[in-house]
Each structure stands twice: as structure tokens, then as C-alpha cells.
Length: 564
Image 1 (cartoon, rainbow, N blue to C red):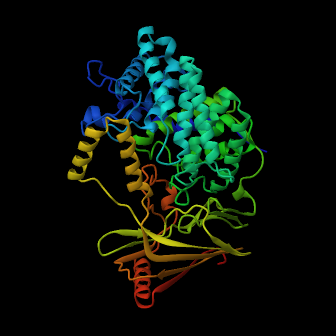
Image 2 (cartoon, one colour; image 1 turned 90 degrees about the vertical axis):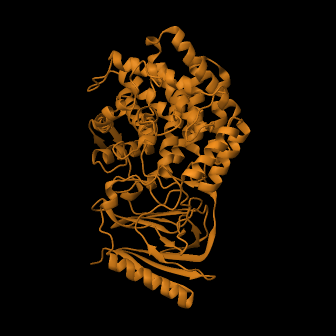
Image 3 (cartoon, one colour; image 1 turned 30 degrees about the vertical axis):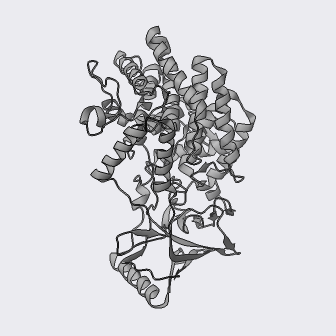
């Protein structure tokens, strides 16, 4: 058994340095037209033409700081915090459409994510502040929460399965049901939970756009764990246990998690769900302890790396993780058993297309489902040893292609030593707004976005263009990996099936080939290993393109070695 004292305070230590930046986001001037807004780019810089509702998730941050007494919280009971929190509540109410929904990315969006996430955090923040809010003011918030809940009862996520969105919708319905005392919202909570569990893989992972994504799974686990704590639903606890058992394989010896092998490439960690479950789930206890230690080493993507779009979700989660640890008196967390990287094991998750190999010297993760992405860690040194995210290329037109494309349940060949996977290069979507495209989009959403049906069509179209569009190129990749006692040996073969001109073709350590706002955050792991020299990269690039042009195929061999 391993016991670590007082490490739960790491959550507060990671949040406290950012509180000045967070409070600066609040429009604190009571005469302002945007009093209480937390979208600083909108109300202060005036660079955008609408206020994003999701910034109002900071209502919970303000409420928690005001209402929660604990060591080091100098904001507790400060009347300024209460005034700003009430203003933020009022601003959220003012952003709501008559149908109960909210916008996140553009006017007229009527976003399930914005309605669900703000519904939960505003609702939970309001519950913590209710005794300090005048009755007439509270009635307005209750009415807005009711309208948001009713909108969630009528609407669903239709453009894909994003378990973290559905889990937030379920949690929002629960907290709204508790605030207003209406059982309709508990029934709708169960609808969203049922949908998540129906889509949960038999391997345990929660679906995110057709695959397993460790980072977003931790986010979904928080909302589901929060619901479990309120309901004690045995079926939900069993599901969370299976999800946690899968996630353990995605925890790395250096304290990091996830990355290019996930369906959405995320690397952040949301610990609150595991703190909630630590007393009833050995897997959750091990994960919570792992996350505490990673944060203490400052190797995890956290508030210091986050932009405005994710600062409140991560800060709120850290505060709720601390809240769970304080509430259960688990500042000292005991965890029994080993994580997969701490023992020798080989495990292939066929549906996720992920192969985890733990040898005496190293821990390796191979993503047959993501173009053969490979990460190799030094078990003894508990550090990253090497990584390879696959290939990207650039055509004469400037369009990019990549081997890094998601395929669920990919076909593989497995042997005693290793694994072989193959797939096709796909076009990388690098579309950006320009002034004319932006103007056309705004006009379209302003004219048609007021109609709910049109709003759903626009959202679906954007997801198809930015996320789901898949254009295959006439270039196949094949990667064979042998996991030997002292070496991970890799053989790649690229085969061209039709003429294909490329100005560049490179194998790279780390990159993302999908549209994902919550990916690409910096963490120290990114500079933990030295890159190949530019001369080596250019030589390999030239050789690959020459072989493909001359004979239609090219081969590369490399290794991650401990034998010397």
C-alpha cells in the first residue's frame, strides 16, 4: 500500500496563482452594459461581436471561492466576490434565448454544450450562493435554469457521440431538477446517461467522435461520478469502474496521459471524478493518486497552459477535486495495486485499436487506430524515451496529407513479438476563416440561425466540414513494430497506388492532424527528448519522395533502443 500525505492540496496550489487572471475576466463595473460578463475579449477588448456563454461557467469559480471555507482561501466571505458572482449569474440569464438555449461558438448556435455546461456550473454555483441572493433575483435565475432544463429535455447532441457533452447534459438536468424540484429533469438525466452507456465500448472507454480519448474521458467521468454520488446508481458505478480500468492503461510513467493516440488528441486531466470515486473504486483511487503526483511534478496540462476556452472547466474541476478530497477527508489517499505501466503486461484493445506493452525496461503505446502513432517511455527513469506520431506531407497545392487518421476497430496482424497495422493517408483539414468567408458565415447565421432547425443544420454542416470529412489519398502506410526486451523496432512501408506529387513528406515526433481546439496545449514532455537534426529529417524526406516517385514504394526503419 502506498500512502501520500496532504497531496490533495496540489489542486489549490495549481489554481491559486491564476486567480488574479480569472478575476480579471469579470466585468466588475456595475454601471456597465455587460456587468458580470466573463468574456473579456467581448466586453473589454471589444474584438468579438457576441459574448460566449461558456465563459459564465466562472460563476461556479466565484461561488466556490466565496462560500467554501478552507485553508488559504482568502476570498471566502468577501462581499466583492458575492457581488461579482451575482452579477455573473445575471449576465448568464441575459444571454439566454427565449427557447432556453445558449451560444458558444457563434450567434444563433443554440449549443447543447453551452446549455449543458453552463446549466451545470451556474446551477451548482447558484445552489452554493442561494441563501445570500435576494428572493426576486433568485427567482430569475431559477426561471432561466428551468428554461435551460426544458431545452435540454427537447434537444440532444445530434452531430456525433461526445460522451463528455452528454454527461454534462445529464449533470445539468440533475442539478436543475434539484433546484426546481421537477422530476422531468431527472428523467431526462437518465436519458443522457443511458445514451452514454449504450455507446460505451465493451472495452470500457466512453466514445468521443468514434473512438477512445483519454482526456475527454476524464471530463465525462467527473459528471457521471457526480451523478453517481447523488443517486448511488449501481449500474453507473459499474460503468465507471470499467471506464477507469481502461483509462489506467493510458497513464504514462512520466505523469502525463493521452495525446495523439486518442480520438481527439487531448492530454489534459480532469481529476474530480476520480476523487469522488476513490473511496469505492480501487481503479479510481490509483488514478487520483497518479494525477495528484503528476500535478505536483508540474508535468500535466493545467491552468497555466490553458486558453480562455478551457480555463474555467479545468479550474472548476480542480476546485471540485479539492472539495471531494476535503469532504471525504481524503487529503491522504491510499491506493492498492499497480498501474499497467508498473507491471509487465501486453494488452490489445481491438475496438479502440490501441496496444499497450509493458516490458521490464519500457512502456509502449501503439495506436493502430491513429496511423500507427507510437509512444515509448522509460519505466525505470519514469520519463519519455521516444515518440513517433506518423507522417505528414505537403502537396504542390499547399494541401497537407497525413497518416494520422482515426479508424475504429482497425484490422491488424499480431504475433508473439509485435503487431502490424496499415491504413491510408487522408487530407488534413486546415481551413481558416478569412474576412469574406467570415462575413458570409455571419450573415447566414444571423438570417437563418434564429430558426432551431436551421441552427441544427448549420452545426451538423460545420462538424462534417471540420471534423468528419475524410478524403483519402492514393498513399498507403504500413507499420510493423516488434516489442523486444531492450528495443522497440519499427519498419514502415509507404505505397503509392496512383500518381501523387509531394513537396515534403516527413515522419514527425508530435503533431495533430485533426480540428480540435482542446488539443495542442504545451506540456514539458514535448521538449523532454531531443528532436532529430534538420539534416536527418531532410535526408529522410528526400529519400522517401524519391523512392515513391521512382518505384511506387518507400521504406523506413528505426528503433527506440536500450541495448547500448
